[in-house]
Length: 345
Image 1 (cartoon, rainbow, N blue to C red):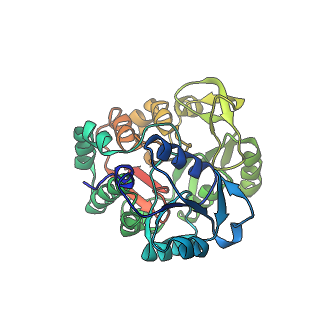
Image 2: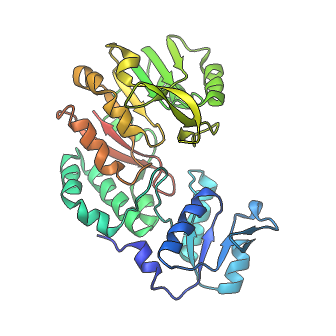
Image 3: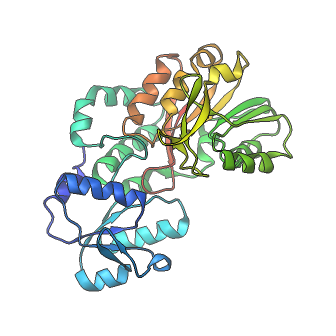
């Protein structure tokens, strides 16, 4: 098991600098403060350097801080899957100690050595259930990345978008697809691209502005129903922060929104394939799909990177309903460990 990044940072002599600003940096700074760790600078990509300050530090360029400090420890404070950004991260990591600290996208709790030790048997149980060697390697790499922040673990296990479909997620020509977190229709388009026909598509997107884009982008598709509601473990009303994008989340400060379960939405109708990327509400979505899972055993792609306990709680939630799924995990190009999915087949 890898060393824990936070404990390591308490011992280092090199200056610590942050790469990036915004919400991700705020979360990382909060953890640094809790551990009593100081940082000495902030830099942004050249196109984002401004004559401004962030948490009391002038926003610099990488070259400016390199000239000032020489060797330093760089903490990556944002997420991206863009090739030019990944290439720049690789370049900096060859010149400096670079880490991408693991802080949860949603919720609290850190992925620490103590957390892993406290849940050792649960981690072993998930590992035993993984169906192929690539899944076992990926699971180990993701755990070690979350502990250490070393981006090499992510680079070592990433696959391209076609690999799951070629290896185990075989889609036929009469699939009925339930897209939870359909965003602007990009995953609907990807599904259609991978089939030579389909039976039906139901696309669910709770953010109102994004939902309008979903409607526009899918209006030419046949047999598709778009639903502007929030998938959850219950039916009723709740608050949802509409941020016009993938960062829309269930939030106490959000707008009142209708919440529904998969079972209530389908009302007994069969679906053969479900994608769940619902910004940290995946366990609730699984629990709200209990009858559908038990009766129809749909293939499922479930994002497992939003919450600290997703790696453990998502398999537990699914296998409590059906024990005969095969479980896979894959990671696509991104830093930190976003774009990591469980597949239940």
